Length: 230
Image (cartoon, rainbow, N blue to C red; front, top):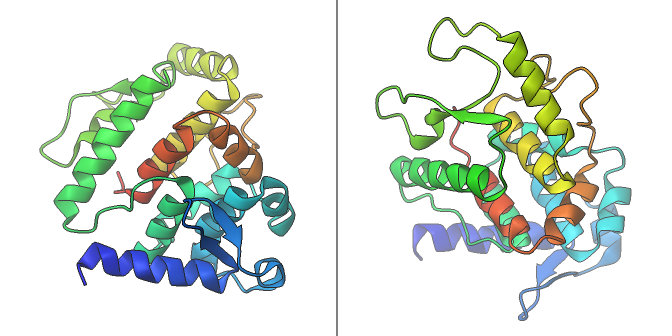
């Protein structure tokens, strides 16, 4: 079995273990509600599980993981394994991620990131900087507000403008911005979107927003499942 196909088979098995399966139509359904309600979910599987449950019912997903925020699940992305990335992508309606080589993952992540910044008009929060070496396209994307070309010191007027831009964004843009920002830097944000910026978006609500906007869920799933660090 080809390497990536093996990950798909294992991802489907992992989803079944938490009570979810994919129908021939491409939609997701519970294999067993009791299993979905009570199955043990390892911390690194939580992002894929939340997304899979939300693909069936966002209200169930919210109740299964009460209080879980979008940034909570994005912060767990670096801990995920290949099967978990694949399960998340499939539940989002995205193609399964590639693990053929680190180069291909870097390329897919960088291209997807640049496309999301352009497609969802996130330029008020992210800028393109001069690349350093050949470490991947995504290294040309940085949050606005710091002197990335110099001493990496904060630039107060630019940070203020970034936060103002974020507050004026649509919910979908805010979901995408928070995702990119926490893929860039995990953990509590004390640098960028502070000072009253609305960032406590529940994970299930974020999935509903993505699902309600055409290709957005698949775009988000492709980005997250190809995470390649910074």
